[in-house]
Length: 114
Length: 111
Image 1 (cartoon, rainbow over the protein chains, first blue to last red):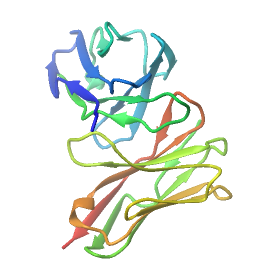
Image 2: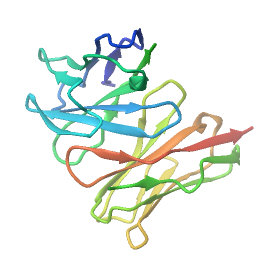
Image 3: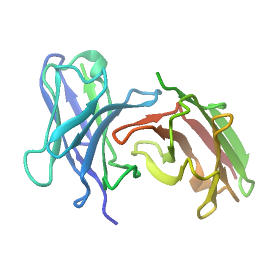
Image 4: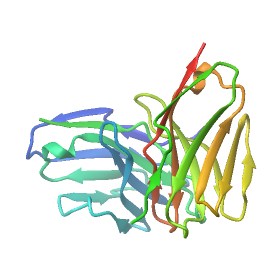
């Protein structure tokens, strides 16, 4: 069964450092997403991406965040200067984009900012 | 803004019993809903979805009920098994680009 894959599974970084979280969405999907989940809290929407541009972003997704689809398979989330409060589990998701369709999630990257 | 909330943070059931997990949503414009299961250390896993033109949908051992009048969603799991132990989230959608997730209910299945 096709799945969304994310790397790395864990990332530890120092405050102020840049991190790049990587995702390979399901191959025939057209819509891509990043969500995050702070420990014990809700899964929160960050950004959606379609046709090589951001479709929508939340207030969390400020200028420190960016997304990119550098080739035909990868989808990345970059945090330019990490803050302590960026520590969370980051989930990539994709959907077929034929309308309102279910999201398929990856297993997540646990980001710890020290 | 939208809010999606759950009535109970933790639910404990005996193996073999039926489980009912509830969810309230506040945005009457939401027209697509999904239940996700999240096991420890894993991403949300799709269980079942329902669109607002339906009030009930059944899957394998699971049923989702939607009551648009009171903006309430429930997930019923028949013959609950130890492998069903997880956190369950409801998610609502009112545009094509994002889902709003509830806080989650932890389901504990006692052997």
